[in-house]
Image (cartoon, rainbow, N blue to C red; front, side):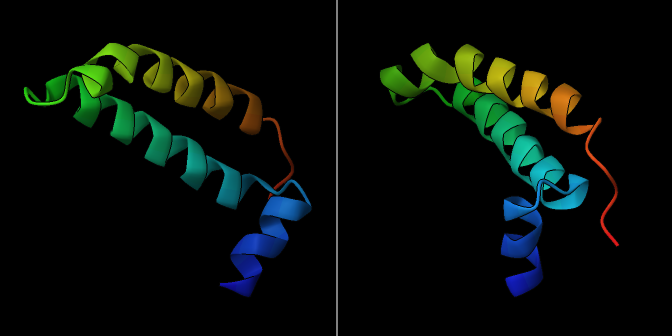
Length: 64
């Protein structure tokens, strides 16, 4: 767990890709659920944020 937070603070690729992937998955889940209207409303923004974040993070240096 400490390695994960250290990677976040030092801008390493692995932990940030995981955060971006979780955002994308959360956005898709929010899009597919039929119960909560605010989740459906913001699903596109969450998915788009995760996708743009993944593109940016893919240029970060690898984790040692």
